[in-house]
Amino acid sequence: MNILTLTTDSGEKDHYVASLKGFVLSNVNNISIVDISHQISPFNVSEAARQVRNCIDSFPSETIHVVGVDDEPKIAPTEDDSALPAIMKFRNQYFISIDNGFFGSLLEEESPQEFYILPDFVKAEEVSSFSMKTVLLPIAIKLIKAKSIKSFAKPIKRYKKAFSESVFMGENGMVGQVIHIDVYGNLITNITKEMFDRYTEFDKFTLFFNAKQYHIESFSASYNTVPPGEKLALFNSNGYLEIAINRAAAKLQGGAEQLFGAKLRDKIRIEFSSRGSHETIDSLFD
Image (tube, rainbow, N blue to C red; front, side, top):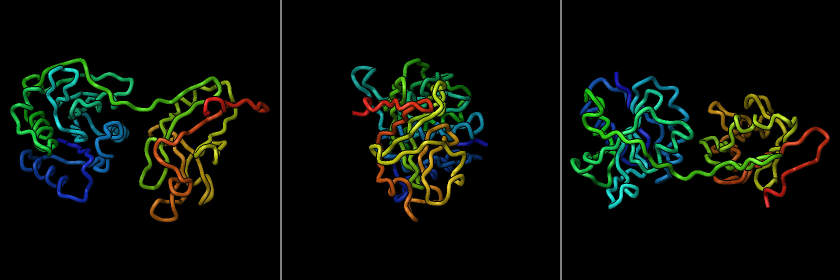
Protein backbone atom coordinates (compact mmCIF):
# COMPACT_ATOMS: atom_id res chain seq x y z
CA MET A 1 0.00 0.00 0.00
CA ASN A 2 1.21 3.51 -0.85
CA ILE A 3 1.39 6.02 2.01
CA LEU A 4 0.87 9.73 1.33
CA THR A 5 1.07 12.47 3.97
CA LEU A 6 -0.37 15.97 3.73
CA THR A 7 0.91 19.13 5.39
CA THR A 8 -0.71 22.50 4.66
CA ASP A 9 -1.47 25.92 6.10
CA SER A 10 -5.11 25.75 4.97
CA GLY A 11 -6.65 24.89 8.36
CA GLU A 12 -9.54 22.47 8.80
CA LYS A 13 -12.53 24.81 8.90
CA ASP A 14 -13.10 24.80 5.15
CA HIS A 15 -13.40 22.13 2.46
CA TYR A 16 -9.79 22.28 1.24
CA VAL A 17 -8.38 19.22 3.00
CA ALA A 18 -11.35 17.05 2.03
CA SER A 19 -10.96 18.17 -1.58
CA LEU A 20 -7.29 17.18 -1.55
CA LYS A 21 -8.04 13.73 -0.17
CA GLY A 22 -10.89 13.19 -2.60
CA PHE A 23 -8.61 14.07 -5.51
CA VAL A 24 -6.02 11.53 -4.42
CA LEU A 25 -8.57 8.78 -3.80
CA SER A 26 -10.09 9.39 -7.23
CA ASN A 27 -6.73 8.85 -8.92
CA VAL A 28 -4.90 6.22 -6.86
CA ASN A 29 -6.05 2.83 -5.62
CA ASN A 30 -4.81 1.18 -2.45
CA ILE A 31 -3.46 4.28 -0.74
CA SER A 32 -3.38 5.45 2.88
CA ILE A 33 -3.52 9.22 3.49
CA VAL A 34 -2.06 10.62 6.72
CA ASP A 35 -2.43 14.21 7.94
CA ILE A 36 0.70 15.64 9.54
CA SER A 37 -0.71 19.12 10.14
CA HIS A 38 -3.06 21.59 8.48
CA GLN A 39 -2.50 24.25 11.14
CA ILE A 40 0.85 25.56 9.90
CA SER A 41 1.08 29.35 10.19
CA PRO A 42 0.32 30.90 6.77
CA PHE A 43 3.35 30.76 4.43
CA ASN A 44 5.66 29.57 7.24
CA VAL A 45 7.78 26.94 5.49
CA SER A 46 10.23 26.67 8.40
CA GLU A 47 7.40 25.64 10.70
CA ALA A 48 6.18 23.13 8.13
CA ALA A 49 9.68 21.68 7.90
CA ARG A 50 9.88 21.26 11.68
CA GLN A 51 6.54 19.47 11.89
CA VAL A 52 7.41 17.10 9.06
CA ARG A 53 10.94 16.40 10.29
CA ASN A 54 9.67 15.61 13.78
CA CYS A 55 7.70 12.61 12.53
CA ILE A 56 9.37 11.24 9.39
CA ASP A 57 11.29 8.58 11.29
CA SER A 58 7.93 7.04 12.20
CA PHE A 59 7.09 6.39 8.54
CA PRO A 60 8.31 3.49 6.39
CA SER A 61 10.54 3.78 3.35
CA GLU A 62 8.92 5.04 0.13
CA THR A 63 6.39 7.20 2.00
CA ILE A 64 5.50 10.31 -0.02
CA HIS A 65 5.12 13.59 1.88
CA VAL A 66 3.36 16.46 0.11
CA VAL A 67 3.74 19.92 1.65
CA GLY A 68 1.45 22.72 0.52
CA VAL A 69 2.71 25.81 2.37
CA ASP A 70 3.49 28.93 0.32
CA ASP A 71 2.88 26.54 -2.56
CA GLU A 72 2.27 28.68 -5.61
CA PRO A 73 4.99 28.05 -8.25
CA LYS A 74 6.85 31.02 -9.67
CA ILE A 75 8.82 31.10 -12.90
CA ALA A 76 11.11 34.14 -12.76
CA PRO A 77 13.60 35.58 -15.31
CA THR A 78 16.49 34.14 -13.27
CA GLU A 79 16.67 30.64 -11.83
CA ASP A 80 17.55 31.89 -8.35
CA ASP A 81 14.30 33.87 -8.14
CA SER A 82 12.13 31.02 -9.37
CA ALA A 83 10.08 28.84 -7.02
CA LEU A 84 9.48 25.57 -8.84
CA PRO A 85 7.90 22.30 -7.72
CA ALA A 86 10.49 19.76 -6.65
CA ILE A 87 10.93 16.23 -5.34
CA MET A 88 13.52 15.29 -2.75
CA LYS A 89 14.51 11.81 -1.65
CA PHE A 90 15.71 11.80 1.96
CA ARG A 91 15.95 8.91 4.42
CA ASN A 92 14.46 6.70 1.72
CA GLN A 93 11.26 8.77 1.64
CA TYR A 94 10.02 11.32 -0.90
CA PHE A 95 9.12 14.95 -0.23
CA ILE A 96 7.18 17.10 -2.70
CA SER A 97 6.91 20.86 -2.29
CA ILE A 98 7.72 24.11 -4.00
CA ASP A 99 11.45 24.89 -3.69
CA ASN A 100 10.69 27.88 -1.46
CA GLY A 101 13.04 27.09 1.42
CA PHE A 102 11.18 24.06 2.76
CA PHE A 103 13.72 21.47 1.61
CA GLY A 104 16.76 23.22 3.06
CA SER A 105 14.97 23.72 6.38
CA LEU A 106 13.90 20.08 6.51
CA LEU A 107 17.43 18.86 5.87
CA GLU A 108 19.07 21.17 8.43
CA GLU A 109 22.74 20.10 8.16
CA GLU A 110 22.09 16.84 6.29
CA SER A 111 22.11 16.18 2.53
CA PRO A 112 19.43 14.66 0.29
CA GLN A 113 19.85 11.35 -1.47
CA GLU A 114 18.34 12.82 -4.63
CA PHE A 115 16.80 16.15 -5.63
CA TYR A 116 14.73 17.02 -8.72
CA ILE A 117 12.86 20.02 -10.07
CA LEU A 118 9.89 19.92 -12.43
CA PRO A 119 9.81 23.15 -14.50
CA ASP A 120 7.93 21.57 -17.39
CA PHE A 121 5.27 20.21 -15.07
CA VAL A 122 4.17 23.71 -14.14
CA LYS A 123 3.60 24.58 -17.80
CA ALA A 124 1.68 21.39 -18.41
CA GLU A 125 -0.71 21.83 -15.50
CA GLU A 126 -3.27 24.48 -14.70
CA VAL A 127 -1.66 26.55 -11.98
CA SER A 128 -4.18 28.25 -9.72
CA SER A 129 -4.48 29.53 -6.19
CA PHE A 130 -5.06 25.90 -5.16
CA SER A 131 -1.62 24.73 -6.27
CA MET A 132 -1.52 21.90 -3.75
CA LYS A 133 -4.28 20.25 -5.79
CA THR A 134 -3.37 21.36 -9.31
CA VAL A 135 0.41 20.97 -9.15
CA LEU A 136 1.80 19.13 -6.12
CA LEU A 137 -0.67 16.26 -5.78
CA PRO A 138 -0.52 15.45 -9.53
CA ILE A 139 3.27 15.18 -9.09
CA ALA A 140 2.74 12.75 -6.20
CA ILE A 141 0.37 10.68 -8.32
CA LYS A 142 2.89 10.70 -11.17
CA LEU A 143 5.59 9.53 -8.74
CA ILE A 144 3.39 6.65 -7.59
CA LYS A 145 2.57 5.51 -11.12
CA ALA A 146 5.83 6.23 -12.99
CA LYS A 147 8.48 3.57 -13.42
CA SER A 148 11.32 6.09 -13.18
CA ILE A 149 11.40 9.50 -11.50
CA LYS A 150 13.95 10.67 -14.07
CA SER A 151 11.37 10.18 -16.82
CA PHE A 152 9.52 13.32 -15.72
CA ALA A 153 11.86 15.22 -13.35
CA LYS A 154 15.21 16.96 -13.78
CA PRO A 155 18.05 16.13 -11.32
CA ILE A 156 19.62 19.18 -9.69
CA LYS A 157 21.93 19.78 -6.70
CA ARG A 158 20.79 23.20 -5.49
CA TYR A 159 17.84 24.00 -3.25
CA LYS A 160 16.75 26.97 -1.17
CA LYS A 161 16.70 27.21 2.62
CA ALA A 162 14.25 29.38 4.54
CA PHE A 163 15.59 31.74 7.18
CA SER A 164 15.41 30.38 10.72
CA GLU A 165 16.72 31.79 13.97
CA SER A 166 19.88 30.11 15.23
CA VAL A 167 20.99 29.52 18.81
CA PHE A 168 23.76 31.78 20.09
CA MET A 169 26.31 29.67 21.94
CA GLY A 170 28.79 31.51 24.18
CA GLU A 171 31.53 30.26 26.47
CA ASN A 172 29.29 30.16 29.54
CA GLY A 173 25.83 29.81 28.08
CA MET A 174 23.43 29.98 25.17
CA VAL A 175 20.45 31.97 23.96
CA GLY A 176 17.66 30.37 21.96
CA GLN A 177 14.00 31.11 21.46
CA VAL A 178 10.51 29.66 21.46
CA ILE A 179 9.84 28.32 17.96
CA HIS A 180 6.54 26.51 18.54
CA ILE A 181 3.69 26.39 21.07
CA ASP A 182 1.80 23.12 20.96
CA VAL A 183 -1.88 22.40 21.64
CA TYR A 184 -1.16 22.00 25.37
CA GLY A 185 0.50 25.41 25.57
CA ASN A 186 3.96 23.84 25.98
CA LEU A 187 6.86 25.99 24.77
CA ILE A 188 9.10 24.24 22.25
CA THR A 189 12.49 25.90 21.76
CA ASN A 190 15.25 25.65 19.15
CA ILE A 191 17.75 24.51 21.80
CA THR A 192 18.63 20.83 21.41
CA LYS A 193 20.05 18.27 23.80
CA GLU A 194 23.09 17.96 21.55
CA MET A 195 23.77 21.70 22.03
CA PHE A 196 23.28 21.48 25.80
CA ASP A 197 25.61 18.48 26.09
CA ARG A 198 28.51 20.46 24.63
CA TYR A 199 28.94 22.27 27.93
CA THR A 200 30.54 19.32 29.67
CA GLU A 201 32.89 21.41 31.81
CA PHE A 202 30.00 22.80 33.88
CA ASP A 203 27.95 20.96 36.49
CA LYS A 204 25.27 23.58 37.13
CA PHE A 205 22.89 25.61 34.96
CA THR A 206 19.99 28.01 35.24
CA LEU A 207 17.38 28.27 32.51
CA PHE A 208 15.71 31.70 32.31
CA PHE A 209 12.61 32.61 30.29
CA ASN A 210 10.13 35.43 29.95
CA ALA A 211 12.84 38.07 30.42
CA LYS A 212 14.31 36.20 33.42
CA GLN A 213 11.04 36.40 35.34
CA TYR A 214 11.04 32.61 35.62
CA HIS A 215 13.87 30.13 35.99
CA ILE A 216 14.48 26.38 36.21
CA GLU A 217 17.65 24.71 37.49
CA SER A 218 17.13 21.05 36.57
CA PHE A 219 15.60 18.94 33.82
CA SER A 220 12.78 16.48 34.29
CA ALA A 221 12.70 13.01 32.76
CA SER A 222 8.94 13.30 32.22
CA TYR A 223 6.02 15.61 33.01
CA ASN A 224 4.93 13.69 36.11
CA THR A 225 8.28 14.04 37.86
CA VAL A 226 6.99 17.33 39.28
CA PRO A 227 3.68 17.92 41.12
CA PRO A 228 0.61 19.03 39.12
CA GLY A 229 0.76 22.73 38.38
CA GLU A 230 4.55 22.96 38.69
CA LYS A 231 6.78 24.21 35.90
CA LEU A 232 9.35 21.91 34.32
CA ALA A 233 11.84 21.67 31.50
CA LEU A 234 12.72 18.55 29.54
CA PHE A 235 14.11 17.44 26.22
CA ASN A 236 11.21 16.03 24.22
CA SER A 237 11.21 12.93 22.02
CA ASN A 238 12.67 14.95 19.14
CA GLY A 239 15.54 16.27 21.26
CA TYR A 240 14.27 19.86 21.64
CA LEU A 241 14.12 21.73 24.94
CA GLU A 242 10.52 22.10 26.08
CA ILE A 243 9.10 24.19 28.91
CA ALA A 244 5.77 23.06 30.34
CA ILE A 245 3.48 22.90 33.36
CA ASN A 246 2.52 19.44 34.55
CA ARG A 247 -1.16 18.57 34.07
CA ALA A 248 -1.96 21.97 32.55
CA ALA A 249 -3.41 22.54 29.12
CA ALA A 250 -4.15 25.65 27.12
CA LYS A 251 -7.87 24.87 26.95
CA LEU A 252 -8.21 23.81 30.59
CA GLN A 253 -6.26 25.34 33.50
CA GLY A 254 -3.98 27.20 31.12
CA GLY A 255 -0.72 25.89 29.74
CA ALA A 256 2.75 27.35 29.98
CA GLU A 257 1.92 29.77 27.17
CA GLN A 258 -0.88 31.44 29.15
CA LEU A 259 0.43 31.10 32.68
CA PHE A 260 3.87 32.47 31.80
CA GLY A 261 2.61 35.04 29.30
CA ALA A 262 4.89 33.48 26.69
CA LYS A 263 4.81 33.91 22.93
CA LEU A 264 6.68 32.79 19.83
CA ARG A 265 10.26 34.11 19.51
CA ASP A 266 10.59 34.77 23.25
CA LYS A 267 14.23 34.36 24.28
CA ILE A 268 15.27 31.30 26.25
CA ARG A 269 18.56 31.69 28.13
CA ILE A 270 20.73 29.07 29.78
CA GLU A 271 23.61 30.15 32.02
CA PHE A 272 26.20 27.55 33.00
CA SER A 273 28.46 27.62 36.05
CA SER A 274 30.45 25.34 38.29
CA ARG A 275 29.24 24.84 41.83
CA GLY A 276 30.25 27.83 43.92
CA SER A 277 30.75 30.02 40.85
CA HIS A 278 28.66 33.11 40.19
CA GLU A 279 29.74 33.68 36.59
CA THR A 280 26.89 34.43 34.23
CA ILE A 281 26.40 35.58 30.66
CA ASP A 282 24.19 38.57 31.47
CA SER A 283 26.13 40.66 28.95
CA LEU A 284 24.71 38.54 26.15
CA PHE A 285 21.15 39.58 26.96
CA ASP A 286 21.43 43.36 26.94
